[in-house]
Length: 217
Image 1 (cartoon, rainbow, N blue to C red):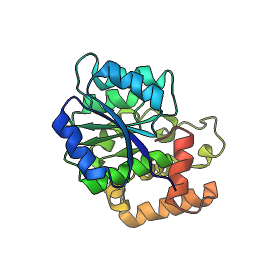
Image 2 (cartoon, rainbow, N blue to C red; image 1 turned 90 degrees about the vertical axis):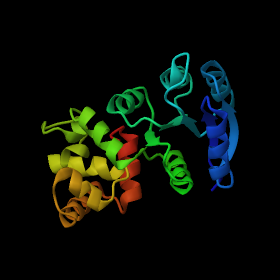
Image 3 (cartoon, one colour; image 1 turned 135 degrees about the horizontal axis):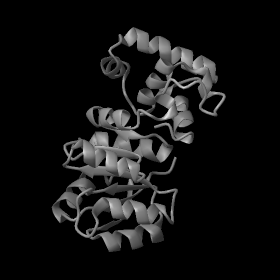
């Protein structure tokens, strides 16, 4: 499989240099920008698989980059990489279309893994940040108790199975899902097995892909 094509957007040269030093041997870095206007123009021109995006920048910041690029290139995936772990920042960037959000204390190995997962169609959030997203989007059909979502496959799942599905698709381990939902890891495993059986899927990767296609992550 070819390596992900990655574009960096950050207004601090030292940070961009550090990111490149950590990931350049496992992804293809096809460009970088330190200003919003330049970032928008170059991303649209080069069509990277994944954009590593700083949230707080002058001239509209990461939100403006997201909105303008996705309005013209909806196949580009954005991973917010920020010093902020504030709920309002996470929620705003996800609502604008980002497929992931991690903080800058992430290790190089974890960042590379996040990039590959985003390119594969997964959504990636640090566990604490995923909790913000889960709470903010708790009215979505995947987490609600309503009888029908309009998707026959999704409607097979119980409310609890939908909650587990969403967290698993966001990259939570069974133990983390258990802590979030206040159930045991064994119970999580039972729910996952039930979801896989009902959806006729074989593993967690297929489950994440299924959820991503339906914009449930």
